[in-house]
Image 1 (tube, rainbow, N blue to C red):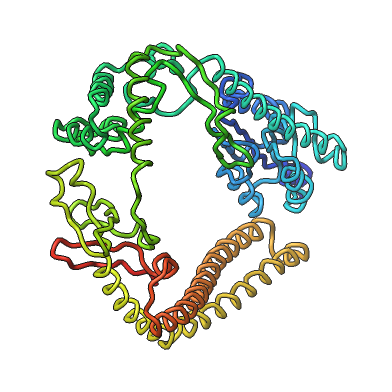
Image 2: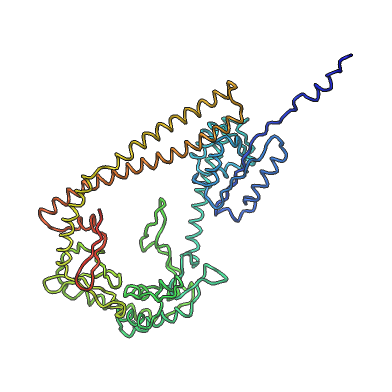
Length: 511
């Protein structure tokens, strides 16, 4: 019997062509400064990239990586870091951005990623707005120029923003943070101050009391007695009244803002640090908002403050020794700092809360020599404790063996990862096994690296602590010989000294 022809069946059994897609990441970013630009919006960027992928079937969108409200001058962005991780484990091999500025606006770091990291990861970069594709434009000088222009744009924007702020100050626009006590922002214009009736009444009352020659301590006491919320409580809209202090009243009495005058530009930012400016750089804007007190009342108060200040300067001042305990002595009753006073031939610490809020504290006090004696005894005891800590078994005995094990395992996994590629090339494993095993090894490598970093940090911390303990022991040994307290002893070994009503002290010691 004649054999059946296999021509038709062979045609049917031949393997079908399986297209290879370019696994693509869409990266979009928007900083706070760019939110008003419609074309730069997150959705707009997504749509532009999506349109490109739709027209190029060989690209397959793996995921969209988004960083919203984050500056392009930093690369510590969650979306970008996730993109790098997915590239490292082989999930993506191409990234598309609307333009290079979405990737970054720092010329050096952006160049590092586009010219070093991306090629190392086998990551193709396409910038649609710049008509750039690293596959065909590799080595193109345009990329470096674009990075420099993007960084220059950030610097220019920053300079223009500062100029706009200073011009706004000159125009009487309020550019500060929370409005001062007595004012709120206008609902129609957030840069305009308007009077807040409830707190403005208190400001007027403070000035009236000051004109009547009440001291700032007396005014603070009256406000606390009347349970008027302090400016700090008022700002936070707390239900508790908070405390008024003499220095709070003093600031209100000296603030020209209550005349309707804005004084701004008292600080400026330089090299990312905020620093005070000289008074001749301050910007005055008169009649910028409605005044709470009249110029006559304000001038009368300033005159009284000046005469009181001159009177206090003319009085003979007592001879004081240096207060080495400054900022360290606290009252156990109210938690407030205690003030140092000279009483004939000795010093005492007194709680000042009683002066402004008598009902809040009983007026705790203690002699300075009592504090000194207590601290001296505790520092000698601390010396013995530190010596014991230095002589006990080190944590290194527990940590180092585990650290060595982790290092060996890391080396083994990294060698396995390297050998995977050889196995793929030689046909021992296919691409699917290669991706799965590489991903599995990478997870273990990440876990071991994290544990290695933790263990190393413990060792470094222990080393630093022991060095400090040895230094402390030398200082305390010297102190035990002479028992003379200095400000250096206080700053190094004492956190707070809490004075209890019966004359006892509790010291928070620092190791």
